Length: 323
Ligand code: CP
Image (tube, rainbow, N blue to C red; front, side):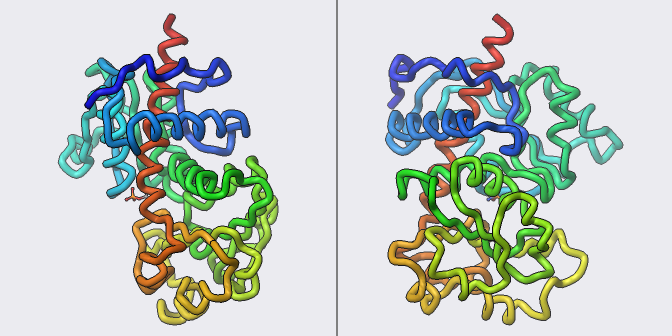
């Protein structure tokens, strides 16, 4: 079933950005524009299951130089549910093996009539480089350990839907903060919307320098647990680490895994989030991941709504600029 375009309002005049590279530069008003648009799309499309053709004739290119399940598929589905086209680029089978640069690769794909490039790359700043060198819009789908703005937005949307507001909530990001792009985007977004943020994990992964971002630091999950409204459990990013940040995974799980005993000591109604992929038994036990406090799959559905909203806003701002 395709819904009527007229069911959607116009793009808010306050939205002027052609790119989404991170949450660091966005104001609280801009964050709320994206979150409100995501809710509008979720409502208008029955939880993002139906089409609403507002981007017919537009094309997005997924340029993923790192693996992805959730982000890549939901950007593709989001563009298709908005009536647009998607082209998928796989770096392993591309001509980059013949020496072509990222910029040249992206420029060639843009020359085929692409409106938006969605890029994930292991090097921080790659999407900024593309935004400076392409004429089309660029969306950051994760640049190394730097930012993952749509992940931050979908985490925040999930909390807002469950709690009504971010203001006054205490949100703990638990685990591998040092190598996490999700942590940075969450910190920027949550703080701007009035949440108190605690970073919790081993001292090798949570430096006291993070206090400069206005957050609380803790190395003791059991001590902060009774104060937290939300726990966002971040995966240990072994692939980015040159040395093990703790003696064994078993010891990490003993101190930081969210398990049934810890749920019993947490606030009533505590929300358990995880950006995924989850490692069952490391940052979260299966009974908690699949239990009543978990909103992990709601996050995934909200990811689709957020990406529909971002694509719609960015394509709209780009069209306005061309008028
Ligand atoms: N959360 C997230 O970015 O998942 P993927 O790596 O599967 O895209």
